[in-house]
Image (cartoon, rainbow, N blue to C red; front, side, top):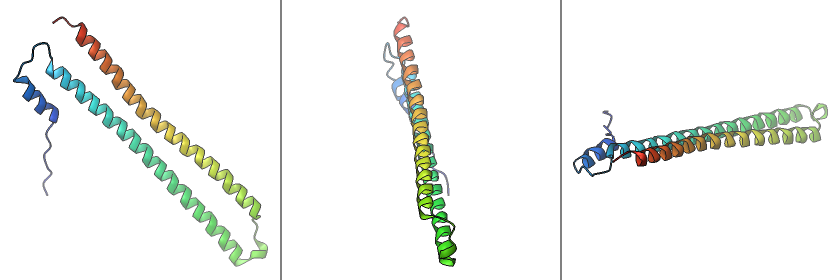
Amino acid sequence: MTKPEYSDPFSQFSAMFQQYKLPGFDVQAILDARRKDVEALAAANRVAFGGMEALRDKQIEILRRALNDFQGIAQQFATSPAKASSNPTEVVQKALHQALADMQEIAQKTQQAQTEAYAIVTKRIEEAAKELKSSLEQPK
């Protein structure tokens, strides 16, 4: 199966606009700036998606651990309920402490992903502002 060929839409726009030669407009600079915008958004989306994957993995880990814990407790009570070493209150307390720790870790991962994505977009906005300022300061 052959891989479909994708062309760069920015080069297509550049070729199209170059034929019009608009005075006072650096078409290539405008297209380069928009390319950087798209690249920054793509990078922010990759970071956000990575954060979602990390959350998914953490939730799977939590579910597996909970199922293993419940299975261990059930086996313990099934084999010898009188000799069960776990006090039900202790089991519930341990589960609550673990749930709080898991929620804190999930919140930290979410905040980290959001912070990284925001930093990428903010950096690109700052670069775009500098580009605009320098293009306005250039003699025409």
